[in-house]
Length: 179
Figure 1 (tube, helix red, strand yellow):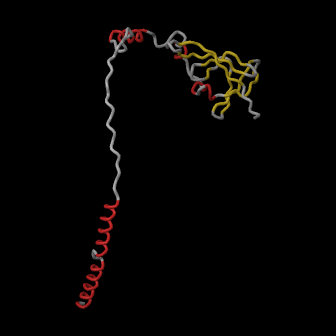
Figure 2 (cartoon, rainbow, N blue to C red):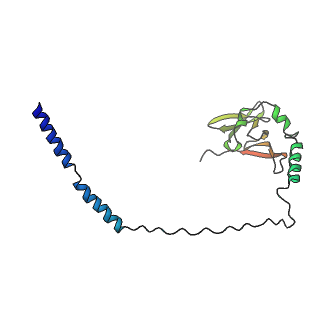
Figure 3 (cartoon, one colour):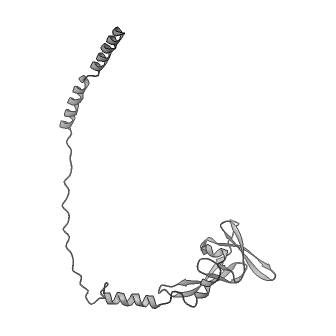
């Protein structure tokens, strides 16, 4: 056993000696040579431009941050009713299925007559719906006024640029599926 331990110690010492720093001297010398040869060229940063603040000259214009004007505008907006007489009935009625889809995702694909009344066939998300005069569709409280063989006419209630609720007419045209 002692002989085996001795041989093991000698072999271990030889392995450790082989892992010595003989290659590290060459590596250290190469790194020093590379540092001498390579010079980094960093361009100096240009000096930032000097900021010159400009004074606000109203020149007879309205002051955009005038507290009195802002207060008046907020009061005026608070006094205006949020829903007009045009919109009030639409808010209390029960929503129909087609009112959860935008009008531009709908397509009229056909029409027929049931009990003498025109019925339009409207496709939404690969589903087919029957629409009659008085039905609601679209996100803007659209109510169907007229159905012909080639289109569905409806009245929508939208807000204009001034925030007022106004009526506008919209149509769904018959889509040609033969192409």
